[in-house]
Image (cartoon, rainbow, N blue to C red; front, side, top):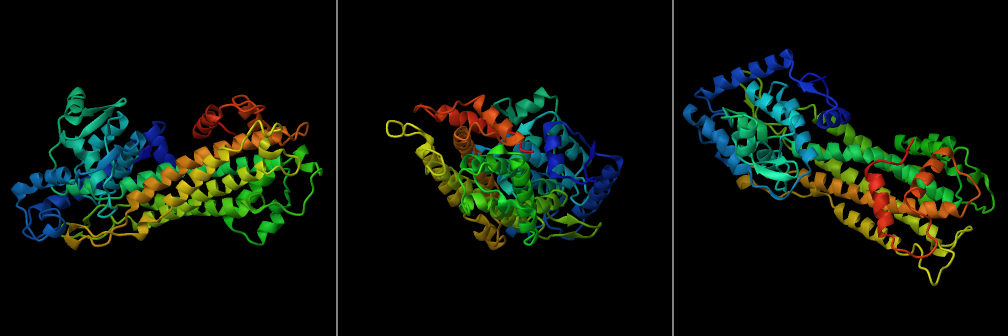
Length: 495
């Protein structure tokens, strides 16, 4: 059981709650924190002193004071007017992760919302009532205003839900679940839509995917090395201890593990002094990507245990209008991680190219009947296209800022775009590594009767159980799609 507002979230815990394998609850301790903070807001809402967003307008209208009678309408208008997102709906899992992270933030007792509101969001999470959230429209400060507005409009009976794979009006879904729309009170609209949960959800989902792809890139590289009859000396522990980046050390260790007890590696039929960088420098390149992954994970886990709305309620008389909603800390790290993910594909494409050159006992284009057959010439065009697409996605949105809100919000993070692009890049890595596996398996067939390490043999047999060796030219699209699905569904053994 995970205790919202008390325990510490991690990437794995968020994913477990989203998948339903871990249940979240509001303990008495968290309820007390929420209720105490709510009492402070009630005092401010009925005070003559102006407190931003509680009894004033928003953004450049912060100098317009609102009467207690207008409070509810003010908060309702906030969600309605800010729900201006466009584009396709985000993945359902992202919507759920956003709600999980928002509940955890609200339960820490600095946002001033009612317990009833939080309990309704938890009901949505536990019953898979997942709001429709458009993918575009957030500038990443004051938080993810547009996507969070869409996420929580259904609390009011507005907006839409997913029902299976169809979209239904929120009012209809609430009625079916015997739920009345909520009437927001002072501060609650702000508490809901100020925050970085859209950026954070993309970081969490991307981190979980990248964790596997980092391991898988090592496996694909090891299989290519086997097919290329490469040299394993660049992975010696002694070499990496004198330049001890954590990622490098990890990848070198994994390469030694992945290639251990390979008869093929011991075969000296094709000796050379050194291999090209895409083989020799896997610890340095894959390792640098691991370092970037670790950096983003550290920051994301700080963020998921933070309070990122505004204002922050500290006492009966003090609600600080600060900038905890600003997405820059995650935006910059997401851009760094995007480059790191892209490089996994870049080096994989180069390894594919090496296998086509016809060196060290391999036939050109990995086919013995070249001329009549093109063999594996063209799939590398696809990896080249995907690599270039990823490079174009590496432009850092966090380096850009377009002022909004009449200049009140004059520097924004654009972190929502960083998060979306990060996941697009990872989706392309699925495809590039799938093609590398196809190439590596073909090259390994030319090394028989040599045997490979146990883990490489297992993955080779898995590939060959779905995709046959290429003898004569055939349509390869189906083979590629099979391998892409195997990557996406994490079918390969990585350790």
